[in-house]
Length: 328
Image 1 (tube, rainbow, N blue to C red):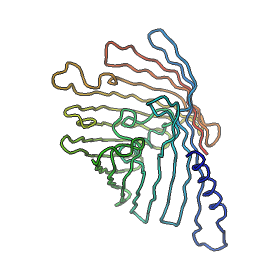
Image 2 (tube, rainbow, N blue to C red):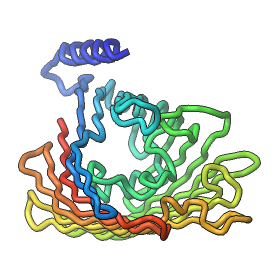
Image 3 (cartoon, rainbow, N blue to C red):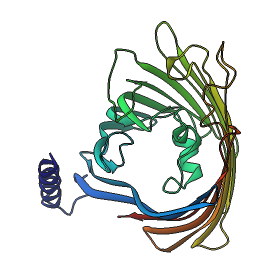
Image 4 (tube, rainbow, N blue to C red):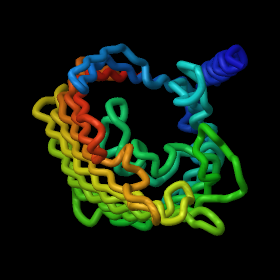
């Protein structure tokens, strides 16, 4: 499988490089390989014990190709820790889709990026350091098999609709239940972005998500807040999760940013139980740090993190991180 993927990339690169160029203004098909690597060194302190390690959390390898002015294709492999089994790293098909875009309309089909938290993730801007709230706490996967369409009615407002398997890109499809999602992004005035989102999936027990997001961003100062609620989490009756996230950043120079974020995750208590169903992950998470970009495509971010669990039987955890992103 690995040799096949490498061969595919080589063949596509040779084809793209060999496309004839002419002196006219006609569109010429073109493409380029892409790579994105997230790595870190961190020290964790809990119960007076210290643990340190180096990690490569993610390596995205792919290729994107413009067939015409309206047609675009993208293939990306996600190499990372699968989170289950004995493997330290595994490759997943993160993106494999075809997109058509003309004027104010766009449509994508295949293994697409989901729409639930893309706006907040983009404004947060530190995916290599920490996932956005909904991604971090399992509200939805960042990619899934399906189709999505978008339409920009005006500079003020745009909308998107998606139908996906609902299982994410690592599990692909385990049942016939689909996830239906709709969202609206509003930019009432310069530098202000607001978004509302809703999705539903399931038959007898329906899982439903509602999210609201508001941000101010002038490329020097960014302040944002979001609220997220998911009813019947993982299609378990009356098992709801919800929470808030506040984050901000300040850019004193072209190469330096200062950032901070606060998350609070909660969950309901199931009938017949005395504690919330998600007690093991409920709590408060704080992160603050500095990002330094010495050259384009390279970022370093020393940062401090503190996790305060709601479960009184667990101790607070302090993390000292040095994150790095390499993009080319």
